[in-house]
Image (tube, rainbow, N blue to C red; front, side, top):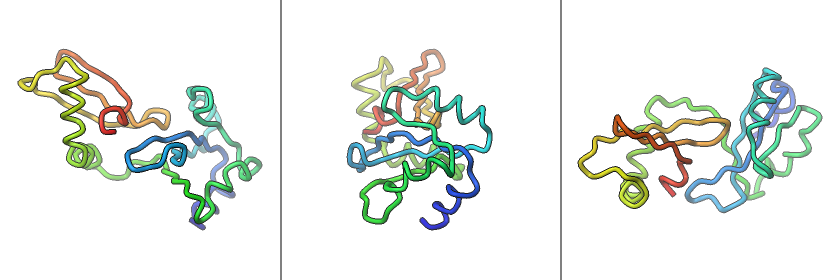
Length: 147
């Protein structure tokens, strides 16, 4: 935590922080943090946020706006927007397999005979799932698929 705080205070000029919903995280307690060196990228990401979804912070001036989230025992969970693992997509499919199958059966036109590809990615701090059978494609928030 100390290294994250030091990075935020001294090395990253722009930070987009937004609400982040995920299974097992209490509503309103999860946040996705995206760090930027580039002014235009940061402001573009910030412009993609909905009302009360999050905000763009310019550091170190705005650091006090997130300081309470970083305190030990605050109950808040921060996730840094960095996908380091190459097998992240496979792990998501394995961990949430039952939820994904239930979603596909209940909320999509796909049948059990369709060969379906599911890819997870992050767009503007939101985890997105792309579901395709080669002809039809559905893009949805991953929380709907796995939640």
